[in-house]
Image 1 (cartoon, rainbow, N blue to C red):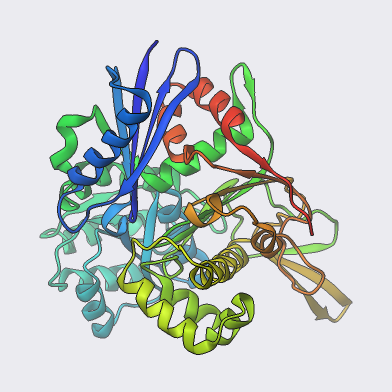
Image 2: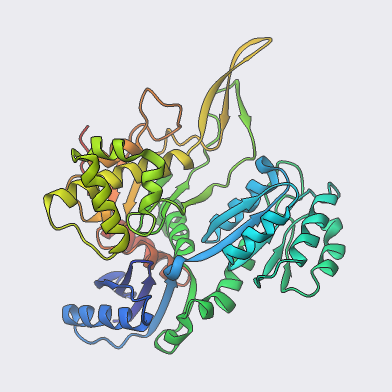
Length: 461
């Protein structure tokens, strides 16, 4: 037996997973409330006590962790054109496990700089212009950022031809140079930026979030939790040497602070004659809805769908909805324990899932041209994806998920390119982020365990 401990410090809960890597077997899992307000060690120790009660004391040979605690990795992205380099910058941040608090296009203003000072991001990504293209904008933005009073690392990933001058302007700040996120028009180059974001997370953000205090308990903190999840989803879809994956998939991670959506699929137009608008999107894509969450971001759900819609979904009065939402926002550890609160939680989950999935998938629209009507696709077409993975407390602990699943699947009314039908899997053991951690060193064992432990859900319309 070769036991390994995998730790996920979430915004609401700390989840730990013990596995025997030699047998690709799950030994046990445990969950405890994340004690951000006091000491993250407390939540971890509580989870370890629960796990020890289940499987006894183990001599763990390796210990790894990921984290999205204390708000995760908060970033600001600055680009040139919203539909091009700004979007490329956002995709780079999302894929690296970051939460983009705000993005800016064109020239930064004094009001923008004041807003960035108030945000106090963990990292700012500065992009803009293809190599050899527009340099005026990124030079202006560099001068504006040089005046910013807040301290944060800046990753420069814009026009290569303007890099030396921009770096001189930002000489007094902590700046890291990367290849341009869009070296050529309509072609993404996000991997170098993602690697730099992960490196900064390890070197600096862990300390800023107070996680350095627990390093004596583990071998290393490897990555932000969303990065671990994306890595697990790629592995589950594509497989590894000696073990096949399950094929293209869409995954929904409904959390207390954010709702993250992952797709591992080509998503290209499926018929001739469809025009593709905008940047091509990555095969493995993650979006994070930082304003949509079951507890910390509960008011984001209200803003997205409105109290009347939540009342319709839950069957509760608007007055009860408003009262209970205020309570949940102030008592984030609350687990629904009576009919009224359970009904509200289900309604919140439905609204959060639908909003987040709609924002992630592509859309199709009719365009009338001089030669007649044509169809234009923006984003990824996931209509043929046949696997949906559900994780997060509100999607794991409920026995009836039909209403939420209907919000993920395509209907005949909307123009969203969502899956038409799919096999549904639940991450009932809460192991997906842990398997992303494990996969860095033991990919085959991680894949075998995911295929073994994910539970099939029988969806009925």
